[in-house]
Image 1 (tube, rainbow, N blue to C red):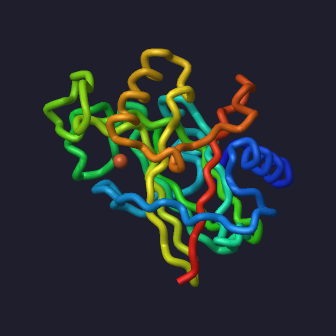
Image 2: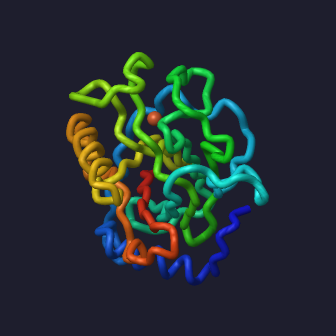
Image 3: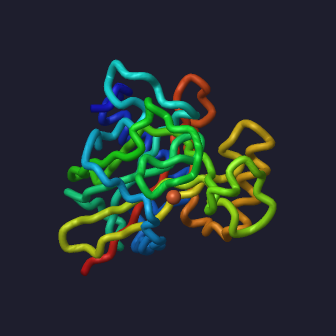
Length: 232
Ligand SMILES: [Fe+2]
């Protein structure tokens, strides 16, 4: 269970405000466009452990994960922008240093014993999902590049969170969510993420948008991304 206490109504209100501020489709809109799919990549979780919605700790009394904590939330909706009940939402990602917990990840980057690396939840009738996680690091496509700075395309992946959404009666969706450079406080990191995003031609419709709550320094930044599925 998550340890960030939040009343369900408060969460719904925050999410709806964020959806409006982020430019995603409002519930009153006639149609929502299917979310763009992207590759699953090689690091889909190998174990079915600790897949709750709080990735910032392995257990309630455990060590806090490294990195900036963010709340990632949004709606799972159909092409009529109606919430989907019973959708399974899975996310998996690298830790703050760009390292996955996966046997195929051979990059010599630091592991984070406090980080959960993946999570999942199933939506109810409101179609809303929510995870507490951290902003992932970027990582090189070749282990020999570890310790070097990216100088062009094809060397590093920009920070991203992998996501897979499945729901009965709908085509399953696998994609990746990215971060806007302005999401970061540090100007050097902003420049780096900007370069990586441009080199990889990150689609703007796959970028996590931050709600107005991002202005409150006492709360985690609230990143919003809604997924639209189409019927089979
Ligand atoms: Fe990845």
